[in-house]
Length: 132
Image 1 (cartoon, rainbow, N blue to C red):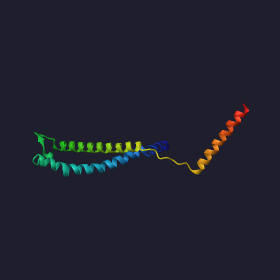
Image 2: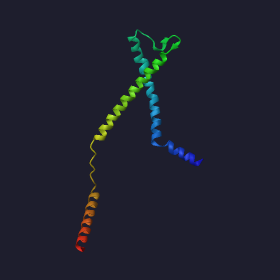
Image 3: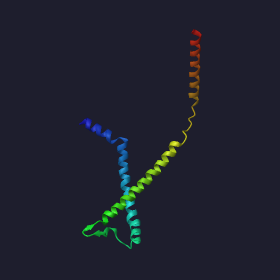
Image 4: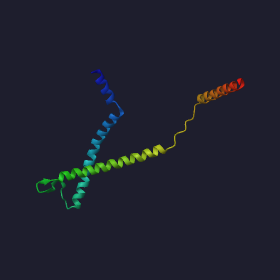
């Protein structure tokens, strides 16, 4: 049982699981925004263009597929928004990857240690040459 708890804790605290949890929370909040966009802006525009046809009331015979049509529109908008967001993130990552690496200026101590190392190497090389 201890190993199970330890393994679960290790699994739950991995970065990918935490990232997934954050993604789900952000996705839920994002869905509210998209739902509002569809119901408050896009659906009235479609209604205006189609002569105030309410998508939810569309039916053919006994099959009412208006809600399905509305859900499909919601899905397309969410997919498009996610696609655009990912494209934007990829552009930012490319710019970040192409940015020149910052030059690191060694500290005074590092410079002195490097000089000492080089001097010791030179002395060792000279000693080897003199012995030959």
